[in-house]
Image 1 (tube, rainbow, N blue to C red):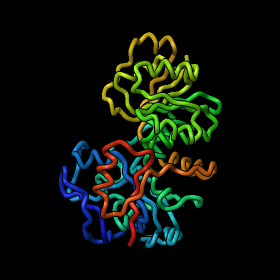
Image 2 (tube, helix red, strand yellow):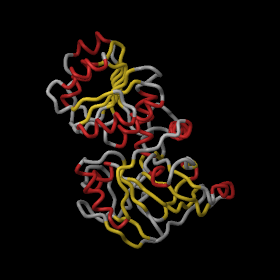
Image 3 (spheres, rainbow, N blue to C red):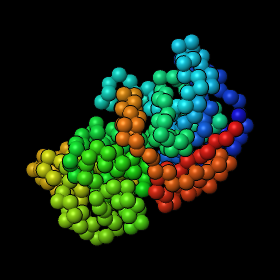
Length: 333
């Protein structure tokens, strides 16, 4: 089969011929139709993850059709269109992942290939209203957004919610999910064009964080926020504390701007704020997330679709941060 193989650090993604994986008990063989990029793939290529092995097939997001099952009980999956839960070995505690938790694509071979072997328990049927390309964009970003929004930040219908960094995959899913849940959603971005696109999705408003007093403008627009979902941290985090309402929740799943400056501690304890970390999600949340997408007929935002042999160009495009939505590989046999 053809697969994208990363053979060493800082090397370009290249199409290679490799063996179709052999499946064992509890596993199925999925013919991948589409797979999506995450920043995780870029960071792995740059060596910014521990435990990287070579050669490896990257990719956490994928969608396809089950062609083979090793166990009799799993033969029911054969011929079904599925999306793949990339959250492996979460463990028995729904609140936190186990010590042996990993994400598909490292150390296990990922979805940037014509075939993938995966445990059948990590499959969900593809939402019927979505194409393979749309469905492939869901798993990692959708799961991360769902947990940080509903499990950690505990957003409720009618609340005012701020999502920072509109344009990235997780942020866009968080925007769509919060709107579908009946929240009044505001966003930040470093691009006025992306703010306009987010508003077209249903956001109430937004501010360019490159402005000096962007948080004050947001405060004027919204009156403050019941919940804030952030991916940047850094010095701007103190401004999020300022615009959070009393008893508000600030949940973050990334730190692209580095260690956060929380500002004056008294603002946090006097407002009774919750500061919450989040990453990925458990198996139950993955199923709930897929059902939520089906129930609300949500269509993921896809920025662009690339052929498998254009994977290196696609990841270079991702590194520029100009995308609005997911970058997807179309994998044809």
